[in-house]
Image 1 (cartoon, rainbow, N blue to C red):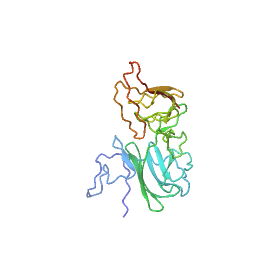
Image 2 (image 1 turned 45 degrees about the vertical axis):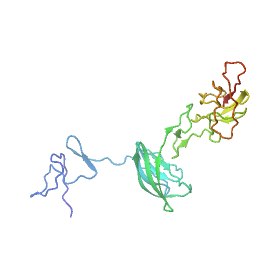
Image 3 (image 1 turned 180 degrees about the vertical axis):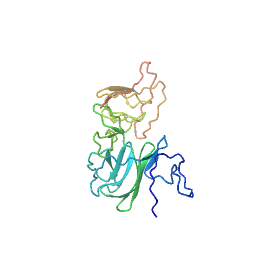
Length: 263
């Protein structure tokens, strides 16, 4: 059954689904599709898409609105034509089979400031992604280890800064130290430190982690003397324990120190 089309220029009575004898009240609405009522009570058509974008055939899955853009998804980077609003492609990789294509996007939407996506791959595996996009890359900017950046021309991939220090041992207190030993701070700052000098009968790391300098070539003096004669056990059971050390200000006392250079 097709109803009679009535053009409204005001909706004073809101939406009313009661059947009234003699026909509908011209100042009320029964239903409103693809439209809205402005503050003056005038029904208006909801604006449609301003522009079209032709996506790569069969290469992307799903679509959602996020951060003022339209987001589609693929397992590999895609070239998306310019459009208004901007359309971008986020890359979702299968954890164990990176080349596996996507089958379907079950959900995509903002969650705690980032895009949350539930994606199914063609083998039936379903994985959930929380896409922390990071900041856009800037020239001459200092980035700390772990920082997330995206290219100025987005390709759907975020990049996390790896300082390259993960292969070196983390600083530990009261362990034997030799010239050439390399350590990194307990809190990664992007630098590794090499022992360039050591003196005393049994050089070792100090009882308190030093304040590490963060400029290439800078040195830090790690004084491991103690002011009491009681030996301090090393955290590393395999280290050589230093002898008891007398008060450093008395004659005949032994001292053990080392100098480390930032790299």
